[in-house]
Length: 420
Image 1 (cartoon, rainbow, N blue to C red):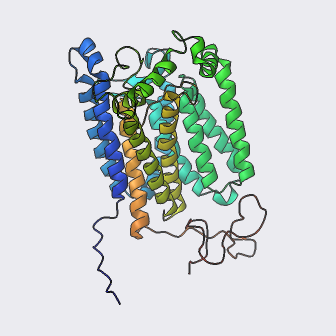
Image 2: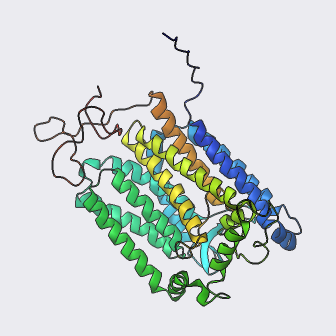
């Protein structure tokens, strides 16, 4: 009989693979921002490293925020949920005030303090909405389908998304809708309720897409970008050229040609095309793999969370960053109509990078609580009229229990029965 080898002691309860994934994406982003912005920075600022220096400073600030958020007990965010949400709503309103919000390309999305310091309120609003809904829905998951829960949920999400659409920024509003739907489903909504809200959100998004002439033009261009190759379809075509010209291994870091006046936003919205142009299929495949790995680690943390609040926080953050990454890459590949949305951790932008890294810190905090077990706090049992705890009904059925003989579905906050 072979002797069992002793296991090495666990030195940390943080999800180190997740940390490595995020830091890898940030490092790749810094390299690509420098490559994609160097010529433009040299022309405009006489300094090819101008955007790299700014992005590096924001990355350092964001990493410090990530470390601090990871060391914080995620349950302490309960006290900050309402103030953070109020601040986010105020900033979303202030950015629309003429003369205060900074406008570019027909959109007013930024509050600029100096040439370096500024904030994009929509980025903060995504994190604030996740934090607030996580604690709010966790306290109401036993009555998730009631009008008293669904009604305020719809009003709150519509308010935040509506202010973002007014900037205008339909892409970010779509991400906000995806986050809200994921949290609503994870909180215990049945498939019928989830499908109904999903259909409502899809209908509103389609209505907004055809309500404005420029959005309708984008939709028509998506269907046939070659109908106007020098006008509305120019960015879509050049994004595809960037991916195609790179081939398997790319033209080399810094040697890409699409960033020289062909792509309108090479270091922000279209940076994935620059990656394909310079690093080829290997580079784009690596980015896709890293985001898939991020989604896997985030979902794993949500499933192992010690309580409902932690599970919803982890799920919201994971869906936010993974869905935004997918949307950006899908736009570049012409799988969805054109929207101006950044690639998390990679595109140039201080607000997006800092807020995203702080969100990862919260995700690490939830993962630490789930791994260590010291922060496990049992959820209060759901009682019936006789005062005895009951199992919640499975989705799509009126009765029955979720628990099965053998191994139960690994969602510790869903069942009040002790595992055995």
